[in-house]
Image 1 (cartoon, each protein chain N blue to C red):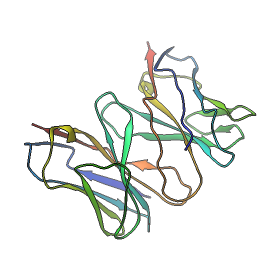
Image 2: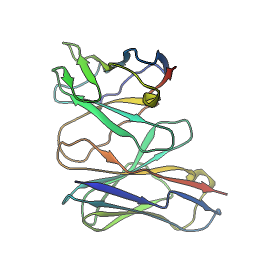
Image 3: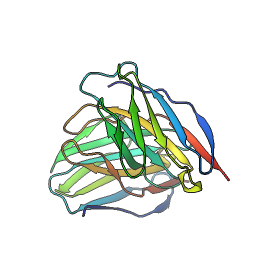
Image 4: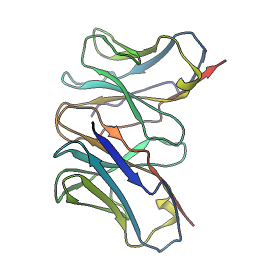
Length: 111
Length: 111
């Protein structure tokens, strides 16, 4: 069966520090991969999605970037974190018309 | 993509049916209706989806009106573990695409 792993679960980082969040999917090939962010009390905002290795689409301009170095690996990065980058970051995957399946998220607090 | 409108909150007595409404009056003919739920501090969990026919699975039933402008998610016998935020989403078929998660309906199941 397919599983999705996200880490770390929680992270506290100072303003101006770099960020790297990793997501991996097991049990499927060539998935569509997504990064979402959820601010406190708000809905989910799509940040990036990828349909294949090296193919990244950005939905909103921001301080973040994404990369897909392998088929089932999706990385969210920042060179210098801002206070506004705090939030709950969720990775998700889908194939073709299947529902999106989410990981358990990373709660990032920028101090 | 079409957007959805949901009530911000609902209460339901434990053991009773929970009926969660959703309006999607601008839905296109090929867009599916999806329902997810999010329990506090976890990633959203897929519940059910449909195009125009009513659907049922082990978790819930989905009733879509004939004109497809609204739908209702039914949890037949709500339990305390069903307390969560429920999201109604419309999604075009195929590929990677932006699922717009609004703020959903916060369902509280009362003992």
